[in-house]
Image 1: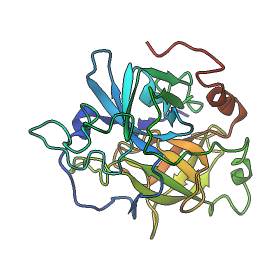
Image 2: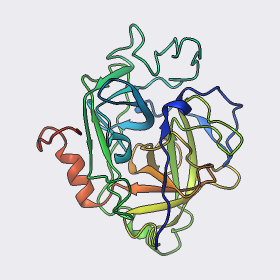
Image 3: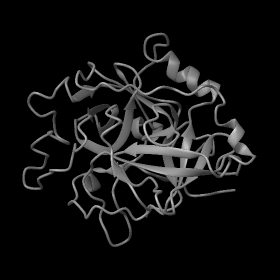
Length: 290
């Protein structure tokens, strides 16, 4: 089956768009004051120009886990862990004066809330050409630990999602997404500037041709639920409702550009993916992305 996968990343133009009313097209979301380990990842080219933005999660003092389609083709990155990292973007200044987003770390925030990196890796991502096993995992290795960030996310146990492929829990297991995606996107509205938001959704499928054991599908429609949107690429998908810190997947793609609430995330609980992440930059040296 051929399909069009639409990455949930945001380009530079969307990253600096005007702020919108606080309402999600897909459902209900909340400001996230819990997961301070979730940051806004600004991707840069070899000249330091902004390529786009994603979300990512600190899994140890130096490593941010995100999507492979975010790190693929980028030469460096800047990660902001402030909850309102881009909320005060000034169009005339070309940045957020409080955080420096997306141009720099604001004075006094470098190594505290904002960290830079020139070591980016992806898990063999190739523009979704290997669908459904898209290899859509990526790592950003920071220059220094963000000293003000207390949270660290945990990786899942191998095969933890396998029981959801069938049986009564398949359609009623809750997941929590936290990221810097747009509050709203449709053909008539430009996505807003980013703050860290959180929402819950329900699993719907692990075994379809779009998933096939590599991805899993969630539904964020209905009262109290919401889905991912532009800028949520690489956002952590936590197992459970609320303050869970166990990431089972990263937000990867949707079938509509307008945030309809049906999302697909790349599974991290497969042993080969966990091995790649665990090998990291210390035990398994590898060349940074060109």
